[in-house]
Length: 476
Image (cartoon, rainbow, N blue to C red):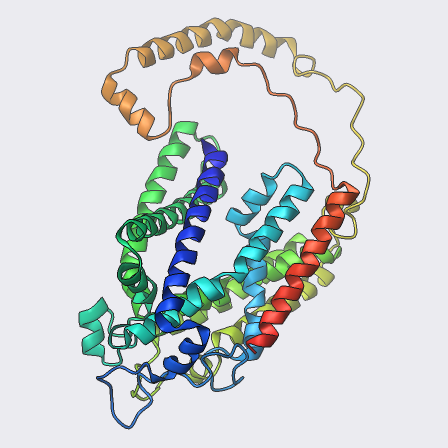
């Protein structure tokens, strides 16, 4: 159970999804005639019903280019290079799902190897997801590329567009029956795994950082029940949020995710980077950098919901800050403002003490560990006066009798209560906790690596970077 079960499950699902995605990619390219066939047929994938004398429903001329016009395109190349990199720093360096798995590695080499393996896998979506989506438009132009709001509403229930059905449509139409069912089940299982990870992380943050702040003496039962109720509320909010996702950013789920990331993640990313590489950054600077950045991001997010992107052929009456500033450019501006706030506030306030940043920044990572206090501190009994000790001794039998009564009542509880406790994750384990020995402290993690393993990892890093640069240049 726990994190180990999640990691093993995710690894198994990744393997199955790779098999299914590679199979779908092969079937798709065979159906369209390879990459050359896709490039030749894509620009003729036009829906039969669309507005005449307009560009609605027509494929983009720069569809096979990564570096697009910096002003009039849907993905301007400066924003792709810089604006999209900033949220990526947040995800790969500070997101709890990634950090949790990295910290669970056996040592530093295993953590670096896992990151490199993920980097290699990140190359595959271009060929296993993006291009099959384009093939789906070639094969089903009237469905995937629908341009009329009424027709789109009938096809997928979203008048803004039906591009999100491209991949599931390929799965249902091209794969054989057995592989089709396996692929759909794995996709749903992966979605559920992601949701459970996110809900669990959000529940932990709410209960441990917020609820315990207002109720510091709350019991474990209360924390568990509050966490379960909070997950239930998150589920309800997620369901109610679906119409906003469908209406946002032209009905394209990927664009919606990237825009939300550009509004909320840059402040966290810049605070983390400054905390790692600038020893002068302090708590007040980080706090105000997060506050200012997140407030600006929330304002832009609200403006996007109030003034949604108009459908094709309709006039654009949005404010200039929404109409002319692309969300990737806003990510760059937000990161700059957050960085400036952290710099100014940190310089204007007191610097952190050296012991507070020892072994916690890039420049202090090699500091020796702090020395342990060898002098024995006086025990709790020595610090108390005889009257307090006499009071504790006199009340001890009463407390023990109360504990026995509690154990007796718990042991005699009904099956309904036992089921309720099991659902809340509160199984009875009083006897086991009393007799269980205290766990030994874990050894301090080391940054040392074996020379051979370190060289192999560095070589793979260079190969991965070269592969990325080649793909950027080829599809630029």
